[in-house]
Length: 333
Image (cartoon, rainbow, N blue to C red; front, side, top):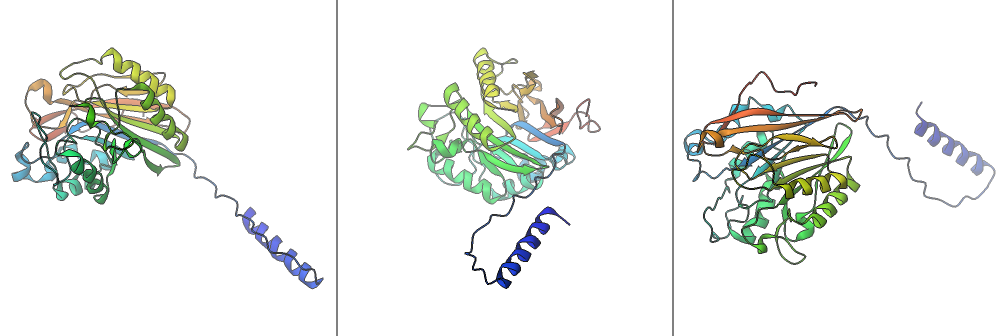
């Protein structure tokens, strides 16, 4: 018999005894003991770089359907516990194009529903394209993603919402995902207390505060961040400083993107950092730009972390394929 059951029987027996003795007992509120937390099991988190679902930019979706976007991965994201992507488009039909060179819109609900069915759990909107159609579309993108079952991070109606983590209870772990945008077309793209926008991915002080708040709520904090310089093959020194600060604040894995080139995955104090995950669901514009990967991070119950890049190639526009479909785990798993 469990401890809680024995406790309840004891209370009933005591009540009967006191009643028999004509003792008047004032009712009291006794809280139930908290439930025992499930033991931790292996947790697998995967992240990607830029995902673009604009059918005007990737015409293959018109003929192949949106299943083409992740259809070359053999269900990779259905076999993990959490998948985080950077969604590089406004997931809304509201607003008008803001003045800039490229404007991407991915308001088709069937596109969002499809990538959710293919295993995407979280979409970072903290980037230089989620605001392509203005603030109203930016805020609406959060709602559209949520309605498709995908947790949005990195933007919000104000700075507090942009910094709000997506929280998950998985395999005995509480996991928080936060998003930042460190590449801004103009300063007014950053959220403030009274302005919609994206989470500031440039200012270390605010980034640290966001990670610390998430760390207070969760066992693990996953960061998705848009940073770096386009076409660079290594991180810029300022981003190394930002990564170190976020790790000290409690980040347990960092997925970077924006550079449109694949950069290395390294560890800082045991924390995996994918500096730049390159294009992912993107046009095949060059051989170098088609080189991509999925960042895979495995958290073991004993505190061990295993990480690697699963190499992939955009073999045709909008269609990444694993280089070796038989290798979907990291060495040492």
